[in-house]
Length: 239
Image 1 (tube, helix red, strand yellow):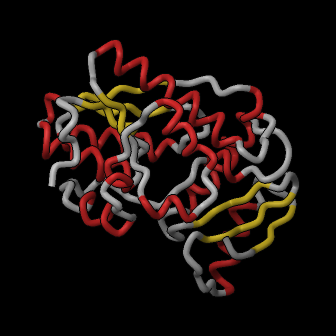
Image 2: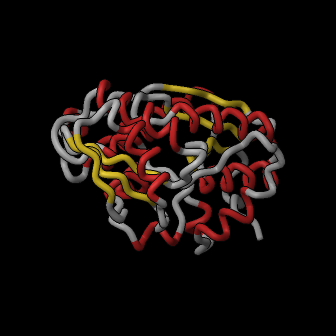
């Protein structure tokens, strides 16, 4: 099956996660590494480990890797309900600038059919800008993406199911300081507690997991000891 039959080259919005890694792998397999590039946003709302992961993925597949920053509009920092729309709009706009500058025919992302089941305001941008989503076009979901991305052979690549740090801030304005705090906590806990989410409610942090996890008393103590260095109150709940 050809996924990129209408294009001779493309640039992939590479987050460092499974879905966009799968798209990059498909693009390289079909068009060749010389005709494919990856672009990764390095704003403060993107976890540093994901940026490093994106670099590893791009290098492993032998494609050019561009990094960039974007400037979301004020609605993003005001933490409005559809902040993801304003964030993604600024990110996609920058990738299109890179594509135009270096002559890539298409901008691709990792959206897939399972994303249609969630509230994802950022997906409106795909139609507005004309982003090509190969997994979505082929009606492929996250399990398919996992299978494809699993063929990228580099033991240092660490795939995790992440949303950006800004989604962790549940009340009040999004600031650099709050984003940095979330990243410091999750960096200390992520590898021992995969899928952990630290939700920032101001003075209170609510600990959740992407996948339901049964914590022992010792687990809770370990997590609380890390989180209480940054938050006055700690609660545990379901994601």
